[in-house]
Image 1 (cartoon, helix red, strand yellow):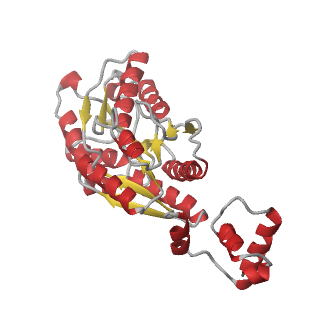
Image 2 (cartoon, rainbow, N blue to C red; image 1 turned 90 degrees about the horizontal axis):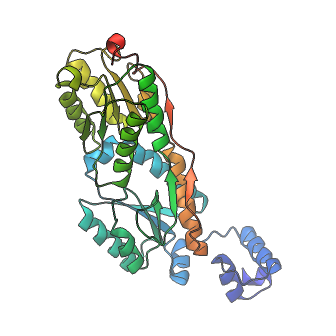
Image 3 (cartoon, helix red, strand yellow; image 1 turned 90 degrees about the vertical axis):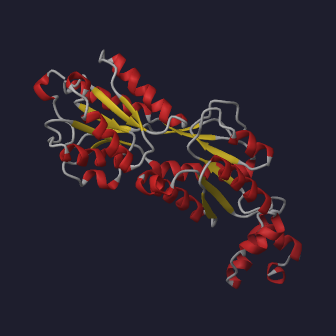
Amino acid sequence: MATLAGTSKATVSFVVNGRKNVAPETRARVLAAAGELGWTPSHRARSLSTSRAYALGLVFARPPATLGSDPFFARFIAGMESTLAEHDQALLLRFVADERAEEDAYRKLADQGRVDGVVLTDLRHDDSRIDLLASIGMPAVTLNAVDRPSPFPAVSLDNETGMDEAVKYLVGLGHERIGYVGGPEIYLHSTNRRLTWQAALATHQVPPGRFLETDFSASGGARATSELLALRGHERPTAIIYANDSMAIAGVVAARQAGLRVPQDISFIGFEDSELSAHINPPLTTVSSDSFLWGRTAAAVLLRFLQTGDGGTEQTLPPAHLVIRSSATASPGGDG
């Protein structure tokens, strides 16, 4: 290739490994020669010469059952993959049992040079992973901003707007007893979403509703729904909002098993707008957030951070919004 391009082997190496200190004309000749020879880059060779893995990491510290029932992650991963494919890079996934195993996984990924950076999901209050990753020199991007100083860029999605729209919609239908089935409060996004629900109830002058914390799983949603439906009189909600569609769909089944009609006797609103949500009976009213775009953008921001070292300002995606279907209707009796 060097002979065909009329330059040295060292210059060819600089070009194929993406180094910047090569004249544009020379770079063009090398790339033209590579095309003529049908040459494609070897990631193994590039990794050896540049100490890069050409891969990003994603570590999940959740029970496998909750990951399998939550459609967010499949679409988020697909979004990441779509960006990485454009840059001929790979995604390395790790599933671990708990926070300690997750921290060990990050250390091993750094020690073994398996990835160039990681995406941090499920941010926790005062998240210790920020200091850990900084101490081991592992670049990262966080999903939403952390509640502490961070050297890493963040890609944020405003779910709170969608929650506020959901509450406003139910209040407009006459509901005054609106429950919420949320996720583990160790996560920042779970707490923020609950606080938004509570604030929206207060804004619309609706009494505080019942909140139940679950593990995001469909079975957890079903149990929480049964617990709410077992309440008596004015304690029982006439509408329930859920932190994801899987729990909401399980809630619809639990309500029917209890002899209730949906939505005539009780209304339901989900979160995420999964593909299945539009195809159940009745079709689920839900808050739509673009998890595919979130994954795609997170990968792009991390790749840029790796290339330039510039985290830039927090990048905010379009806010979540309510998608109205048929699982919510006027409050029974019109008196909430």
